[in-house]
Image 1 (cartoon, helix red, strand yellow):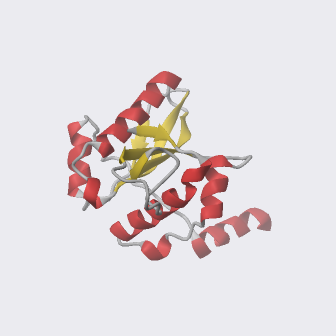
Image 2 (cartoon, rainbow, N blue to C red):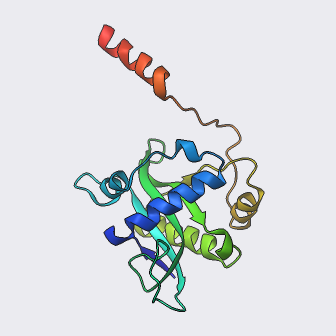
Length: 175
């Protein structure tokens, strides 16, 4: 089952973000707090959205961090935000994170999350659905190819952060 995240899901979303970071060999870079995740998804200036993948719970007596606001056990999530294409003149959907817990992989949850996001695009008139994937993540690449996604080989992701970001920003104030 795929559903829209609620504020009660923030602890499990935060846990899933940390699991994803560990899987991507970058746990030390995952510094977001539960409070920041809550503000990003549900605050007055919310900038992102999330979907939750659940499996029916066999026994709800032992609530833990894998339990969200739904009636099942949370096994994955997708976190996304709107972007914009000046070429098409329409918004698009950028998938920031998609993660399915190892024990639930192969159950169709990742593809179901992608399908739900594709439906958001179609329903809202978004012409593009984009994301980045690590080049070593062969299983994810296989899923993406199976649904018709194609790499954008001509484009290279660029990132400016830390001291380099601060130095460039200082140039704006120096003029």
